[in-house]
Amino acid sequence: MAYPIYQVDVFAETKYAGNQLAVVRNAGDLSGIEMQKIAVEMNYSETTFIISDRERDGGYDVRIFAPDQELPFAGHPTLGTAFIIQQYIIGQEVAEVCLNLKVGQIPVKFSYAGGKPGILWMKQIAPTFGRIFDRREVAVVLNIEESMIDQRFPVQEVSTGLPFIIVPLKSLDAVRSCSIDRNSYLKLIENAEAKSVFVFCLETYNPDNQINARMFDDYHGIAEDPATGSANGCLAAYLVKNRYFGGKDIEVRVEQGYEIARPSLLLLKAGEEEGGTISIFVGGEVILVAHGELV
Image 1 (cartoon, rainbow, N blue to C red):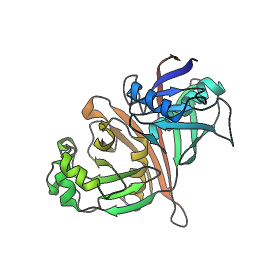
Image 2: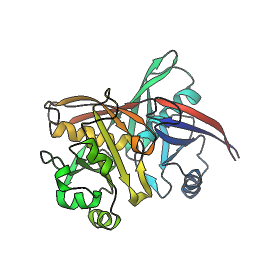
Image 3: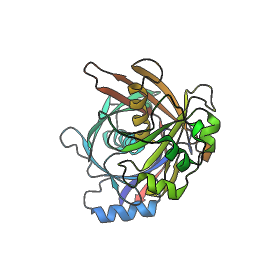
Image 4: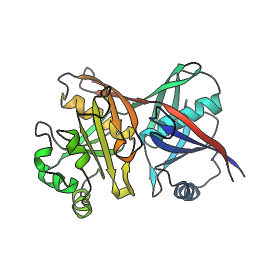
């Protein structure tokens, strides 16, 4: 049997930027083992499988696989898959597409420009905040001086379905200097829920942006990811909780992937609602690169 397959670039303003994604349609008769094997063969950061072209409970059943395991949630696969559903299953302009993921139902909102999707926005689940790390340990993991870490804010685990260790740095030079010391890294994450390290600072390559970021995920076999929607959702929650910009609401342009020649742009909107719940939206563009059949 042949399965329609699509390659898209997510959080990309131009083709061959952002984060790559492979999307397989009508995958309902594939087993989880077969999906995992396909994800390994594709060798993208993630591959998604749309189980059916039919909605269920107001959304489309989707499974996300990294090369080494199935994931409950990931940002750029959610946006990229919603784009494919709108373009090739629904086939007309809609305001919203919902994905039924293991973490729950995630809505993706659409804007349009010239009849084509423009910015896509996904609403993430309410964040949780976990362990605070010793800055000295984290500095050793990142091969940087402890003084490069911004002392005003904590190094902390944050999750909106997938947890990350959020590390505030003082400068672009500090971000560029980061590299993973594997032994220290494995020791740090041994008893931590989060396995991925996300660093950021206020200096940027592009003056139109407000934050530069990098994400390291050696534990899952990804030395560095060019664009990370789930991590940026955690960043948005972190910025709001810690009043990083002074207020409880943020609208931020985040650049990621410049250090590995895959410049990406992620848009964040977040704020603290009455009662203390933080609402988070992560947005970006999706560009179709290729499509065909998987046989």
